[in-house]
Structures are given as C-alpha cells and as structure tokens.
Length: 181
Length: 204
Image (cartoon, rainbow over all chains, first blue to last red; front, side):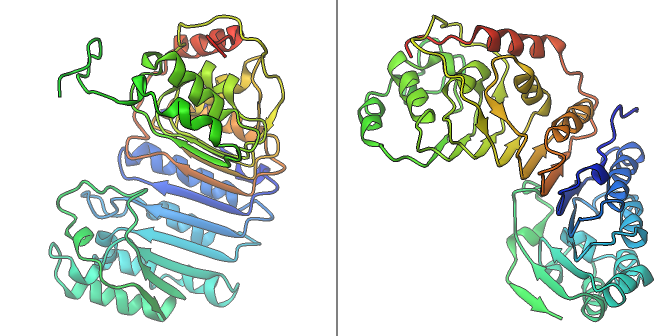
C-alpha cells in the first residue's frame, strides 16, 4: 500500500490540538502510516494537545499493534505539549501487557514529571465490570494508572467507538464517573 | 402504511410532500442554526419543499449549518448562507438534481468557514476546486475529517494546504474501515465539477 501524500502536521503552524483514531484493522500497513503522522506532530512548535483514540485495542490476537504509535508519543520531542489524552476501550484496560506499556513506561513518567505534560487516560467503559477478563487484571492496571497519571475518567461516548458489538458488556454497565489520582 | 409510489425503498417519508414547512419558513426570520436530517433523495422533494429548504439554508442570519444526509452538491453550493461559520456536511453528494433552470440571481459571495466537519474529503475538495464554489476554508480553525478510504488521504492533505496558517484543531478519524482500498470513481468527481459549473436550480 502506498500513501501518496503524508499529512505533515509540522507544517500546520497554527495547530494547537490534534486528535486521531487508531483502529487495528490491517495493522501492518495502516498503523505505521498513522504513526508517521503522529511523528510529524513532534516537529510542530505550537502543538499543545494530542488526543489518541485507540479502538478495539483488545479485540484482536495481536494486542500490541498500537504500541508503535504510543512509543512515538513517549519518545517524540513535542516541545510545546501540555496535555496528552489516551482514550481506550475497556479491553485495553484489562490486559496486563497494556498496563506494562502504558502505566509503567519510563517515557510516560518522564513526560509527566520532567516536562510537566498532563496525561489523561479515558476508558470508554468501566474496566471493573468486564466479564470477559479476570477481574484482577483491570484492578492491577487501574492501581498502576493511579500512581502515574493525572486524571482517569470513565466515559461512555458512542460517537467514535463501536457501539454495536454485543460482546462489549461494559457498554451496559458504566457507573463510575470520574477519578482524580 | 402503504409504500410511496416510485420510492424504491418503500419507506413513506413525509418531507417530500409536506405542506407545513413552506408555511413555517417565512416566520423564521432570525434563524441562526439549522440541522436538516433527511435520508431520502433530494430530487424527490416537491418544488415547494425544496425551495423552503434552500430558503432556510440561505438565511443571512444563519451561522451554524448541519446537513446530515445526502445533499446534492449543486443545491448546497447555491443555497449556502453568506455568514455560515460552522458547517457539518458528512454526506455531500456528487449527483445533480436534474431540475436545473436559470435562477433569477446566482449568489457569488464567498462563505468563510471557521469549523468544518466532513465525511468524504474527495468530494469536498472537488467542490472547493469548482470555479463557482463559494466556500472558503482559508481561515478555518477546526477541521474534523472522517475518511473511509485510504485513497482519500491525499485529499485531506490538499484540504489542509488551504488553512496551514489558521487551523488550530484537527481531528482525523480513519474509521474502522479506513484502510480498505476503496477505489474512488473519478467520474463521481467529474460529475460534481460539471454540476457546479452549471449551478442553476429550478424555481429559486
């Protein structure tokens, strides 16, 4: 697959906020391309906010398909970045490997503590109520998240995620509004 | 309820033959926001209803416009109000209405958008490129693009070229099917350009 034109965010001089959705379909081609777009944002001098929406992060066999994009966020310069928000579905909160990448990552801690970037994790569902995973998984990750991130918020927003997946029992059970770590 | 004759979907839609809307339009003098949600074909609208919608979309007081379903590009371009700042246009159509006659006056004033939501960037780029297009995104501050086809991403970059100095907020949603290699028909784009050049609507 060839992409004729890369969306080069470094050239949008007025850009303050960039939001992108990542999906896992055709991950071999598409996610690296989106990763290049995110990477181009690191050369933007005025970008203050990045919002990364990860869809179906836990629905496929390869659970690390989106980590490349995450690594770009951790390692990029992003000189003017003030806020990084990562939206996840509940599966993403409920697998230990995600927690290792998200919550215990040295780059995330560096962004937050040394460069004063606020990092929010927003789960689209209540991870405690997932019946498809052992309950200790989300609890483990949630405890890790509390130690590293500024805000964890549970939202139910159907405007970008997939609402018609019958296996997403979490959609039916959101009862936690907001946590301040 | 029996199906509407001539409607292949068999769904009875009230809007095409509605008689109340034309009566309401004159009293909406200071309309600032309009959301049209009609999932039928625009060429099935009666002349009175079509003209009512065109009238509403052209109101000078209108700032916020959302047309949720498939509006033909020629109708949209001609009826767009001069002071619209915020536009949601997820389903712009390339097809013409096939009801084209010379209007009493053709609007030429540019419409400078501040925020834009679109679903099919290749159609929108074609609309912008048409010689009679009144839309301007040179001062755009917010852009939301949903794109179901990889081939459209080149068009997204073309859109961004118009507003490199003003855009503050850019959201890109490739959608779950974003990586499908959908072949975009060049004839669709050609059709839109041709319609925009004609730019005449019946009964304005």
